[in-house]
Image 1 (cartoon, rainbow, N blue to C red):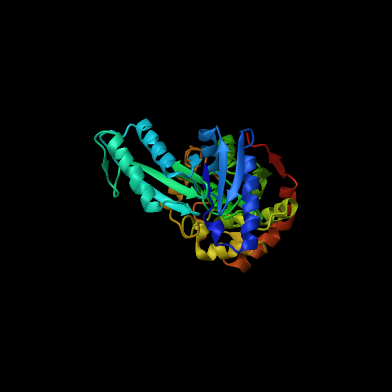
Image 2: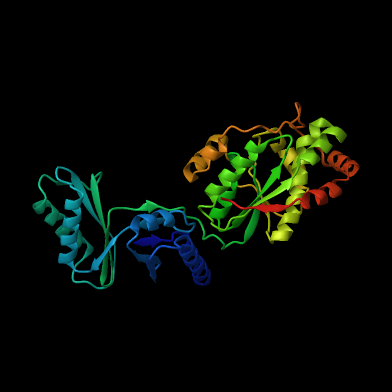
Length: 379
């Protein structure tokens, strides 16, 4: 089986070695329980295994891998390769169909060229299998051949991987996580850039109910496919919302809510050694996400705030959610937060918010909220 890296090859030698070692460690973690052997040759990993289907599926869920090809490994001999390709064509019953031979790479010294390999193999298929034709543009069946010194790898195509950087190559983050459409996609995109991304859920009971929590946990379970060690944290936030609603202008509720989330998240980051906060905000999507409001909210913490969805529209975000598998659990009907005001502020001013927070003794609320911190096991 051929495993291709992609972006790793663009790094310097030192960084490439570091990232490659992390990727190899992640492969062993994801393939735990399966029998396989792994080796490296010139910018590729090669896996020998009998569990082709399971290994291929799991490898496709590993960040840093661009593509995977289940391949047969045979001796780099022209006649042997041609005979094997005929056998493959027969197994796939290409009679009456078109085909193409693609020699994608040939490394080393051989007594044949890439053109020889394609011509001999194609001719043998033509004379062996009835009613087949060559079509290099849009064939019904393709055979790919990669020759590396004494070995040849023959395969039918590529299984698309996630790409990006190996998980763990860029440190640890904390994602504000509701389980809706946006926050799982935001966490996933930062994972794709090599960051461990643990999840922090704010329990808004009694302004939401159990359905919201269950949605978040189910969505977290999907992300666990990409990082088996991902963690799911919970803090209680309902009393804070009640306090805001009773003791502050109602139109400030969402701004106060989000700023407190950032302040609590900062404490959780310190506790869990995370280096920044991830959010699922997109400019203009809801009232709290105007440029002015985002600026005021960002002032709540000195930590980096990463917003990977900031320039995407809802359709683009939903497309990613469908692709990674979070759309279905995120799309489940839940009880919306009833603390949301009828007329939320669109252009908040920092000095006004700070004045309100001082009256609310906001730092005391932050400390009390942080004391409710707990980790919930993802099923």
